[in-house]
Image: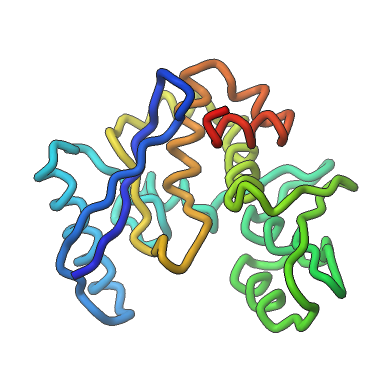
Length: 214
């Protein structure tokens, strides 16, 4: 058995995302067919609890919309250029002995992740982007902030094309990972519906308070 979350946008109150965990039978293995079995099993478990329409947001999604909303597919504007979101996230890392690494912004996401993984530079201490330092806490704030920045120019397209009750990412294991594109997208929808998206995109500190329910 495995337990994985789905994320529902919340349009009223201080909390902007509801996270619900569901248990299901896990299909082991790394083959794409196994991942799709797990996606179906998670969605079915959620449907049994009244959550009907779920969009898998990942490169493994069977829905083109879910693949397009994957962090590996999105680009974020930095200065005058747009770079892969994941590469900007990795290149913004500041370690005890090195960083940030803006030269890897142009790398494909998997190459950027490999570059950072192989870097021996001590503990992660902060993020740095556009000559500004960003803290590690809340743990998922910087990644989520980049994600909503990447989507901020596409609000009209998202309103026309996205109509789901909840969002999931089968690759996200909360016991081992911090960042989740499905949670970030649910945050984006809540902020857009509440009229807070512009403020959140423009001010990291305000966004951090919003996702913390402050």
